[in-house]
Image (tube, rainbow, N blue to C red; front, side, top):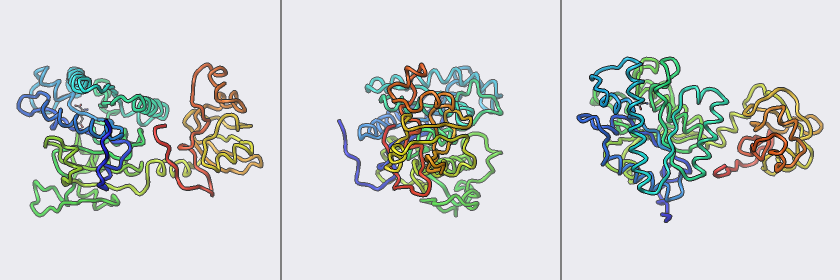
Amino acid sequence: MTIPRPPSSSPLSRARRIVVKVGSALLTDADTGRINRTWLETLIEDLLRLRRRGQQVILVSSGAIALGRRQLGLAKGPLRLEESQAAAAVGQIRLAHAYKELLESRDVTVAQVLLTLEDSERRHRYLNARATLQTLLSLGALPVINENDTVATAEIRYGDNDRLAARVAQMAGADCLVLLSDIDGLYTADPNIDPGAAFIEEVLKITPEVEAMGGRSASEVGSGGMATKILAARIAVSAGCHMCIAAGHHRHPVRRLEEGARCTWFVPSATPVAARKQWIAGTLRPAGAVTVDTGAQRALLDGRSLLPAGVINSRGRFERGDTVSVLATDGTEIARGIVAYSDTDAAKIMGRKSSQIEGILGFRGRDEMIHRDDLVLLNAEPAVQESVGS
Ligand code: GLU
């Protein structure tokens, strides 16, 4: 059953791919330390409602440490790193179990993805995680993501799921990120301390004043807090993704947002594809170059992808995921893009049909040498075209 999207102009209703983040305080009951199941069911129903409208959904869920510490009988108060890692090991399995039960009883396949900071900071791991997320979404699964707290040591951990969620949104090319929190949005000052604090509905630019509203500097902040949410907003909007901070403790927290509940939106200046293209065009030193024939050059100008068949030469040392220049036969740089093959593999498949790639390389990679979403034409960029689901 497909239900129509409301005519509302909310970025949430318009979005193609949405990341929703829920924090531990919402997910677990403070008194019993157990999963807040009735509430969670209403959240799941909201997410499935988005999916029925054709929107893709990724859930970033905290709660592992909170659930595990109760099970292990760890006292209240701050935990040592190894204690929180132990708690996460115990809690994550319970969390995954709850999602599996809730989603599979509604005929949705749930996928657990545990990430570390390195998965978003190292290019190879970033590309792998990105490809996995794309594949899960295209196969109709609902990815539920958390930090891999059990292995992430102090120096290499996010520690908070706000920034993790923003990285996930960036990785997945999402156009909307919703941080469900215990506060309904951003205020000019902490409303718990300053009764005169004013609510901010929309942030078009993250200025130093906006950052100051978040309170303590990022380095002092542990988990959650407004400062980490503003850092998350920075990541999201620079990737072309709208982000909102909204109160999550009511039932059906996402539906409430669409029904007009108060929240703060951070607005990007570009779409995810345009933001990615700006980033590609701005690469200072492409790792290498591929020369294309005139047929391929025409195809690129028409907004199509670069196929191996149109490549006649490759130079420089590059890996999959590096930015390379695309040159015309006279040597002028006509485009830049993120290449799907290393220089050695590119040399083997250039001039060949995409259907031959597997036979030549022994694995099935992408059909395109550079996908059009990863390609930016220099000087003659036509209107940005977004290709859905690839
Ligand atoms: N990854 C942590 C957990 O699952 C939560 C981090 C956070 O609260 O933002 O317990």
